[in-house]
Image 1 (cartoon, helix red, strand yellow):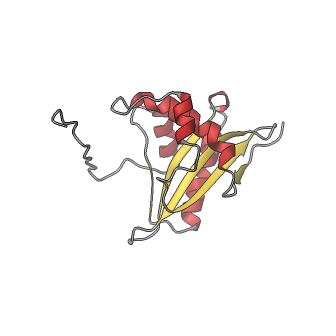
Image 2: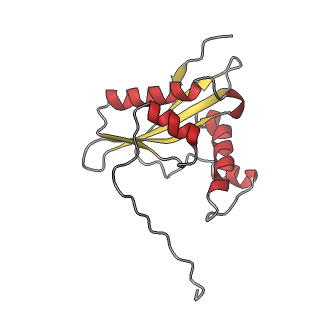
Image 3: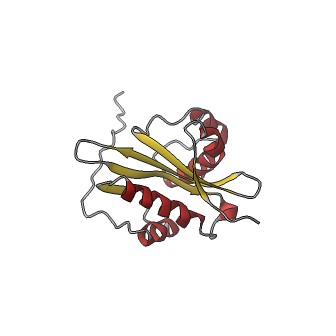
Length: 161
C-alpha cells in the first residue's frame, strides 16, 4: 500500500471527480427539503459539465487510492470581489469507504495552505450545523463560526401564478 498524497488536478480532469461529486449531491440533497429531490441520473445529467456556479479561479485537489481512483477531493474557488482575494472550499468529499483515514484532514490542510500562499483575506466553507464530522474537521483546521448574521431571501411560492 502506497502513501496517500494530495495532488492538484489539471483543469481538464473534471471527469475523475465527477462520480464523487454525484455521490455528494445525492447524499446531501436529502437535507434540503425545499429543493427537488433528484434521482442519480438527473444529477449526472446536471453535472455533465463543470458547474458554472463556481466563478473565479477553480483549483481541485484530490487523493487517489492504490488503483489510481480518486477517493476524495477538495474544490476551491478563489475570487476577488474588490475587497481582497477570498477563498471558498466549495466542495469537499471523501468516498464513504475511505472516511476516518485522515483524507479529509489532508485535503483541508492543503486548502488552507493554498489560502496562506495566495494571501487570501477571507476563507470560508459552508456546512450544515448538524454535520458534526464536517464541523469538527473545519474547526480543527482553524475555521470558526461566522461572527456575522447572515440572512437569506428565498422567493415565495405564489398561488396566484
